[in-house]
Image 1 (cartoon, rainbow, N blue to C red):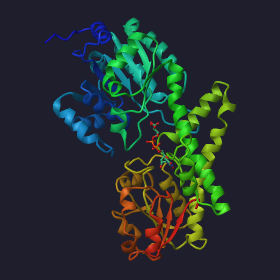
Image 2: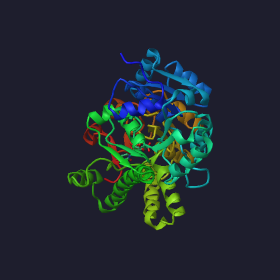
Image 3: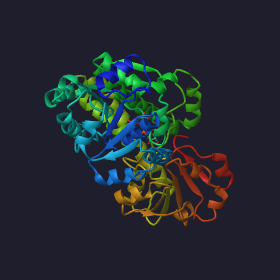
Image 4: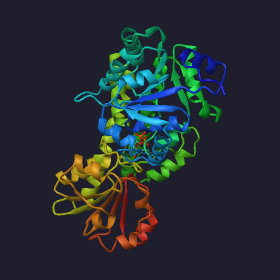
Length: 459
Ligand code: UGA
């Protein structure tokens, strides 16, 4: 056994020589769903990891192997590595600065209140907290979704603030994981993109990602600005694809066509592809809506606002999808929600998540309630979060309870549990066998055969 070298210089050299017995020590700053997942996955890849967060309650929960949100497969992985001692958590910048060869910045960049732009306060505060404590060679790696130009600005900030500035470097490595698939997307990403300014930084990140690279994951090395842009451009493209099919849904409704069949037919063209062409109540969550707005804001600052004006339309189509669903629902309640019981199946912005940020389902539930409907919501995982945000809605602990005496059922988040429902059995508890499928994902034939009036969106 070789004695592990104790300086980063040795570690970098070892990486360049391809020696695998040397393991970089990793820290993850910010332990939300991105950071907690990244920390557990880095431990799974064999590294010693410290996760750092300013929220002591979060650190306590994670230290006991508990995650304060729902993400399939994450908790067992976290517990495995907390138990093995390879993964621990702290609130101390001193501890991570002393420990880490590679520091991943995983804090959120929410939409600024009253503006389109991203709020960089958390990213800046991590850099302000960490940089002055760095007294030895290391690589800081930004994973947060940031306005293009941020990495260059932060590199200057680090250079000015760190006592070891000449041996501290910054890289940018955007994250493409999807909630509900976070562990798999981190361990087996479809591509890795890094923005670097030196061969040493590239070599270190090749070491970090040696396993997925060996498994064939494309590894793209870019400059800071390109790496930052890949992320927002990818989310802008995905949002555009969803809004495109929702615009087609509007046309289909007027023309008497079926948007689901249209999407299937378009999707067979390999240049188009079927994924992200599911029409319905549109996109929500903590990423797509705020990322397209932040992208527009940044393009404006750069003098390229015209290039992205189409994203305003993407945003508008998306918000209209929610309003259209409410209108369809009202029409099937004979023009008024007053005195009507509406069962809403789904509160999360997508299935396999308890995230309700900008959830189309909750937005629709809220609009219907404001128009006089008596709304009862059921979601397998997101009810607690939903209750905090929309305390005036009623919540049930089962589909059957939510649908009791309902004049209309709305299917708004496509959990497997809803697809597995027996429409004949559910038909015995509702007042009217009427369902609107806001995700166009139920088996139409089964619901119709059980005597339900089924209405999809755009068909
Ligand atoms: C999105 C991206 O897909 C990830 O690649 C990215 O890393 C992440 O944002 C991020 O920036 O962190 P996520 O927000 O987890 O991931 O959710 P998506 O799976 O993209 O779904 C977003 C929304 O679009 C959901 O509300 C979903 O219901 C909706 N959607 C999706 C549709 O309405 N139609 C579709 O065909 C697909």
